Image (cartoon, rainbow, N blue to C red; front, side):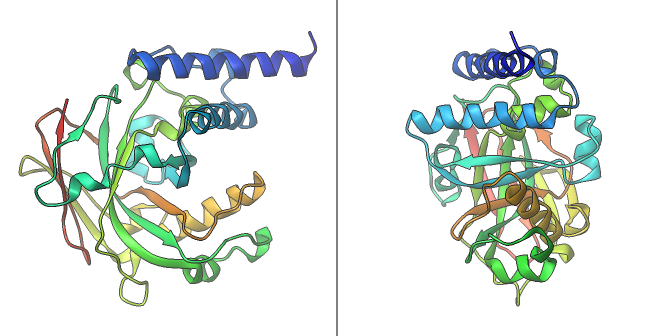
Length: 273
């Protein structure tokens, strides 16, 4: 077996391990024993394999997420750099934030945590040469900003992840909720927002826009560069979750989660098993 064949076999094995954990809702061992701790190309190849499998089953890509953008979350995960993953339409549970809506089902989740974020909807493509992907360019590409809750999850048992584990696991994605209360960037400065996240009325997480790589727009710029390098640039209409504004926290069935991000109406959801 050649070295390339060995790498391909390891990627296939990692996809199978993570897919089985998702299908059975039984967390699995880390995949770094298969793809190593430093090979980001292999980790993102596993991620693409997982996403392609879900697309083949009928899901559709609707955007991207940026993970580990805040120092608090990097500390929680034991990593020192951001990563990205794909958002699929079957991860969108935003209807659960409508007043009077049914609680959001946790039936697809294994070990969920929740965090408050600023999301962006792109009005134009960010298909540019890397040197042209500036803060001004990404600001101009944003149609609106929205309040968001990301329900992160890990297929890896006890969240015992290294960086390649979380990358491979679609950046530890689970579900997401975005509000309908959009703001254009001439009415909102993302780096200046503050965020408070409560569970059943008790504040469990707090932060601000500057915690997200210094500015959620800088996180978007970083993502646009990475997407271009991987040959899959960000497109008009994509939803981008720019990263946590404070630590993520666990929750349980029956919990009421409210994210209050300045400049937006509060975003409120309830969960059920």
